[in-house]
Length: 275
Image (cartoon, rainbow, N blue to C red):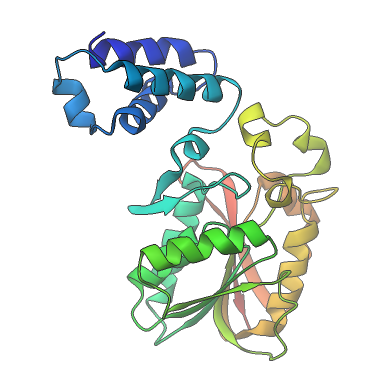
């Protein structure tokens, strides 16, 4: 088969398993053959048997519910290549929007100090460090796998001098108050009842990064409480959430906040300023 025929074959195979089978077939075929999108579109030669075998193995894994990012071992976040490994949460487009919002706000600070709670792959910290001059970031995660992967991504982008990575549970490792200009987090925010309704692809990701407790706000409220002490006066907090979390938020009086929509028009970001 020609590469375009293989691409179409993959799209048909994934039709029942993906919301965008054409895109995912392209991604998996690029990985299997080592060819770029343009090369796949222009190449009129038959696919090598070994490449077709690899491609079909990728399709099998994807049809079993494994996210394509785990299969290819990478994704893109705001233009940055980010390594992905099973056991670590995959960054989403919604998180890109929150990160851009924080970058715009951070440009108003001189040499800001930022705390990212639950850094996962390190995508947020990498985007911020690459866009904000003089920033110093502390990125934390309770997961050993996430901390290891975050270090790998930070080193790949040569940002080790600007991002300190610590294995810690939320803000437990910080003693000093008024330490940070910005706190940012994409914490677990799915309620226990909604976890059961998740798509099989999402269920392949670590529950530690998804489970927000009874009403989805267990971790969010702990971050809000701790941030009220760790933020400097005038400092900001950005937390990704779901609209269903809003009635159960426990925002300290010292934080003036609003809920902002993401690029899809959904309540997605808590933005607050420490008084």
